[in-house]
Length: 245
Image 1: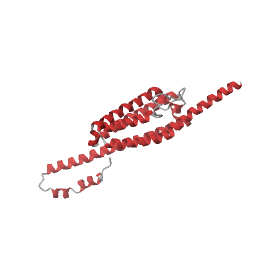
Image 2: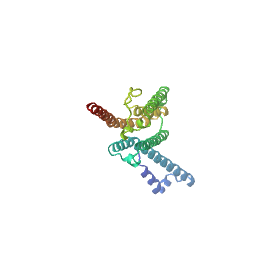
Image 3: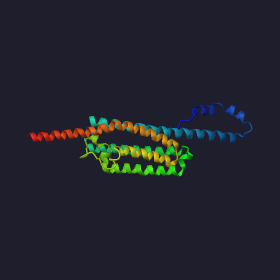
Image 4: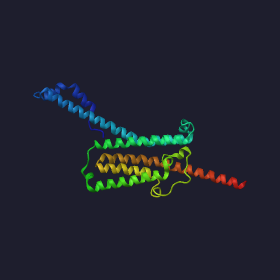
């Protein structure tokens, strides 16, 4: 999280005003004072590293859905990724799936590292909070795994944008519970992890991710439904043409 003081100013003060610092503790041996300065500088550097990791996590959490959604739309209208893979749409879809999966692993790692460096809160370390966390993790993983199982690789990673459509839209579990089990399951996993570790910062990050997912779904759900509706119209037109012949 952002600190309430300017780290750069503090470092400059230590570097440029050592004489003032020495005058405050004239009786301290030079080695002791040097150790104090090294320790303070080390803490500042660790705080900078922690801030950098949190910023990286935020960028991945908030920009990943927008970037991926944009790439899918570009692929659907212009087939750029398919062309890059020599016209092989399945290869292009699998390549994008690997990219999404890798970014997800990086995001999860950054999330856990960021949480490990944040303070815990006593209210989040109670038995009830821990039980809620593990329950959310269990439900979230069920939603994510079952939706992937039902859709397969191409269905999970938006193969419909590549023209790879399923015979019918899946309406059974978990899609009879929510239309976006992958997003909601992922959100539950984030929140569950924050509760298990007792980290308020994780809860704040989870709500940020949730907002991004909700915005993404406002575009993704209607667009996907439109793709299948178009396919059904084309099928109906083809059947009508055959009957007329």
